[in-house]
Amino acid sequence: MRNRYSEILQKGADVVAIGTGGRSYAQAFAEDENVPFPVYLDQDGTAARIVGTRQMSPIALASPKQLQAGTRAALKGHRQSRSGRRPFQLGATLVLGPGNRLRYADFEKFAGDHADIDEVLEAVGNDPVG
Image (tube, rainbow, N blue to C red; front, side, top):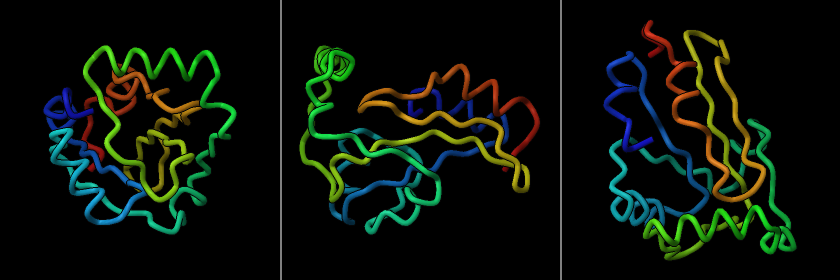
């Protein structure tokens, strides 16, 4: 998202991230990854439960898809520095608005299974959603 953040803003939308760690973890993540948008905290998992994100099992860490995703990320230079408070929490990408409208939802099936940014931008559309 950070690499295409300006396109999202040009479409009248914005991005927020919701992390699983504490304040210092979120701050380090935002600094290390050059995140230009706000990072909020979900320390007790309330937001994850409301949204319905999945938890990864420890056994899933050795799945072929997970190993491929980890290898691709490492080859691109990504390094995992620390895990958050809920290291098996998987993420989701949602496009909301205007109002209560859910325009797009993508739930990770394994760590690194991120939403396709072109699909996200298409869901945002050209009309302001923020």
